[in-house]
Image 1 (spheres, one colour):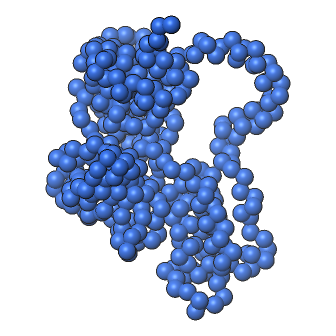
Image 2 (cartoon, rainbow, N blue to C red; image 1 turned 120 degrees about the horizontal axis):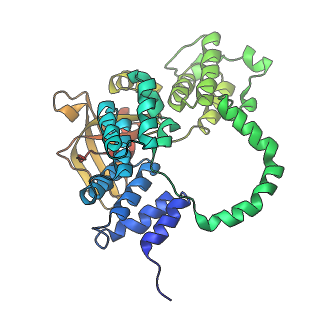
Image 3 (cartoon, rainbow, N blue to C red; image 1 turned 135 degrees about the vertical axis):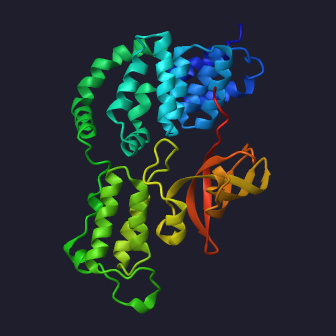
Length: 364
């Protein structure tokens, strides 16, 4: 039996939304498919859906070297500019698409979206949500799954109508993200929100009962609004305060609900100046900081460096932070980059536990 084309297998995985599988199949085959537009476009699109903007930019550029005027590719490159905050460049790319295909719906809708939300702060906030995924490269229907889907569709509707209806209604009305009823304070707990014996520990923040209760409530509200960083700040405020052990324990449990963000989902990003002024208040929050790396120590399983925060423009270093990244990471020390990482404190020093990096390589 003839072996299936890896590109065909990858396309099926892409249709099934298995983007990591697409990347694992295709990345080792770049030499064999170096002249294939479909190869690079599929690989770049998968990286985009995974939140790997650097990988998406690299593969879209290679695809563009093969086909300069493909409207789907130009739209995909426009998304990268939009997510980096380069709105004018994104507009130029969408207009370029309309030059080739005046009826292109994605470019039309994207331009209308930008026009409607032209306030920079509003647009930036929306770009970090799923609002712009409507403009991502299309995912074709996996035809192999259609038949079984049709057979089970009616039964699925009958069994899950009420659940689906409820979830749909909650999404539309921005309903609760999770059931936090267990976090509700009892009357007795509300009457005892303060640590009674202040000699049992040291506290960074001495708060009133009213302030502690407000911080606890705000942490839950921020969580329900998908503002995990803001929720973490309020949790930290409680954990480092004279709040009662019960309140601190419930705050720690709430931390387990918080999710790791990506470049495209992070909200409430705090500056280096904010964090360095009070690192314990922002511990375990996630940030995206720009700068350059120096003093690199790396091998195939480890990457550690000093990160010159704010030095991406080579004008001013806001601060130097030790960063550790998992696994093998390819970073060009001579070029600026962005690091997505979690704030940690080691030996009373502010550090970053890196998750991902984005380093621009240029597009056009």
